[in-house]
Structure formats: C-alpha cells, structure tokens
Image 1 (tube, rainbow, N blue to C red):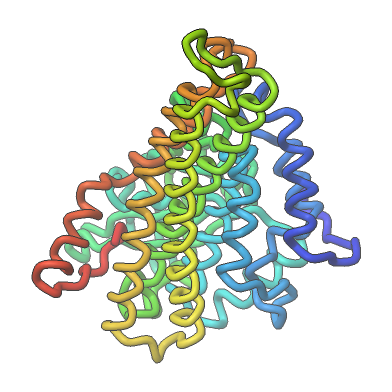
Image 2: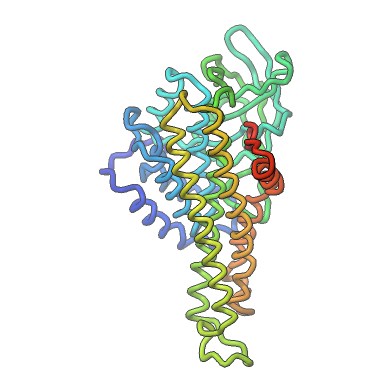
Length: 395
C-alpha cells in the first residue's frame, strides 16, 4: 500500500490512542494466530504515523524522540508486536539518517512521508552469513539473515553484508524489500512477539547500487552516528515499559471486577486484601522508577540528536549510561510485573481465553535481544571505574 496520506493531521498521540483501541480489539486473537498483521500495518500507513519522526522539511511531522517513543509505549500497552515493528521502522529511518549523506537520506525520507513506506530490518550485525561481491559501481549481497523484524510487508529494507575484501567490514544498504533475489521467510515461530515477522531472509545475488550503501559517515564512525544503537536500546526500554503498563492495567481491571479474596482473608473483596495491595504497591514503585529513568534518558537523547555532528564522545557516553540504567530497570520490573500479575488475579486468570501470559511471553522474548547482564556489566564499569561504554551495535 503506497497511497499518500490525504487526511488532515491531528496530534499524533490522539491518533495513536485511537489506533491502539482498534488494535486491542483483536490483539489476543492475533497473538494466538501469529503471522503478519497486514490490516494493522495498513492502518498505520493510513494514519500518517510512519512519517512521525521525519523532519518537516522532508514532509514528515518532525516529532521528537520523546513523542515518537510515547507512541511506541501507547501501542505496546495493547499490542507489543505492532509497537515493535513501528519502533523498528523509526530505528531504520534513524539508521539511514545517521549513516548516510543528506543527498541519500533526504530523498528516502521524502518518499517515505509521501508514500507512507514501511521500513524493515535485515541488519543483524552478529549474523555474518551474508557476503558482498564487488562489481564496477555496484555490488551483490548473497547469504542469509536471521531476526529480520518487520521485513515482511515492508517497502524498504536495511540490510547488511560482510565485505571479506575489506577484512570483514560490515556494509549496510537501504534497498527495496521487493528487489529480485530477496526472499523473506515465514519462519518466526517463537513464544512471544508473534506478529513481528522476526524470521529469516535470504539474499541471492541481490544487486545493490553504490548510492544505496550507507558509507559516509558509515556505521558508528562518529559520536552522532553511534547514536543508532542507543536509539535501539531506548526503543526496547520503552517497549518493555509499555508491555508492563499494559499487564498492570489488565491485572488491575481483573482484580477489581473478577478476583475473589482468599477464604482466610478478612477482606470483603480482593481489592482490599493486604497482600494484594502490597503487590500493587510494589508494581507501582517499579513502574514509576522506570518512567523516571526513561524520562531522563529521553531528554538526553533529544538533546544529543539536536547537536548532530557536534555531539562529543563524552556526552554520547553519558547518554549510553542513562539508557542502560533505564533498560535494566525496565527489564527487571517488567518481567516481575508480568510474572506476578497472577498473584493478584488468581487461578481463574490462567484461563487460556484471557491470554494474560502473552505479556510475559512477549517481554521475555524481546528482553533476550541482548543479555541484560552485559548491560549491568557496563554500568558496573562506570560505577566503579568511571569507564563509559564503548560504542558497538549493542551499546
């Protein structure tokens, strides 16, 4: 679907909340079914939100990262798969902006805003099975990639391949998803994030033009370019918080309307039981702590983004620490809430039709993207030795 958006623009958060209401109506059934959420992706296209973070000069809405991730959280409360691919779409746009020249990213942004293109991911720097073969003015990508979130039903793809001629250097390109030689496999069968299409892709002699390669400044080459992995980490932290908030909201409604006090309780209702109240109090402390840490990290990211190429390594390192702390907190508190929600809802809440387990499955699946222990290790290096994280695709 490449039709331009013609509707008058409304505040993006208002649009996002309306869409979230629509997504919520089928989220439980779609979680069970898996596959590509085509109707929901088309609704995002029609909404105009795919150009949310694109600058106004290129036809977008020019939203801050704070506002963009608020939309991610809004979706994640009801449908974390949609939140995932929506956030990754904006991460792919950031990849283009940070790694390429203006004469590359500006036309791509303009077309994305005009046609409401969806961008998908086939980058995975740890999967080195895709190799480059060079020709005069162009090259070929051949091989396989795993964890290609959002690639299905996308118009554009961020893909990477290893250049053995350059000692294993990673080359990254922005190419049409439907280009000859690209096969997107329907093989995502994991327990969570079941509608993210995070399966594999094959590249069979896929032609990549020289001006489709993101070479200048290239991946992680400057403090500004090295914001890309931090945006990814902050996306995950907001996704985790949104899932936890959604789990909290569903558990709260069930406790108030359906749960029964244990027979030994002196409380007239489950909502008055002291042990239930203790759990909810701890849930709230966890959510509030993550919100505050994320607020600080989002403020720092928007400031760093505004500095562009004037951003220094120290400021970039401080941002990495703020995002790392927020992500660790979101991981721990999110998993705790999604696990313990059954303590406050009771045995009947395990009925399969409710699928309350989806919150934990989705969060547990996505928190394994990169080990939280290594994030804590980086924070420990700072806390004890004053060492800031070294830029990589994961920090």
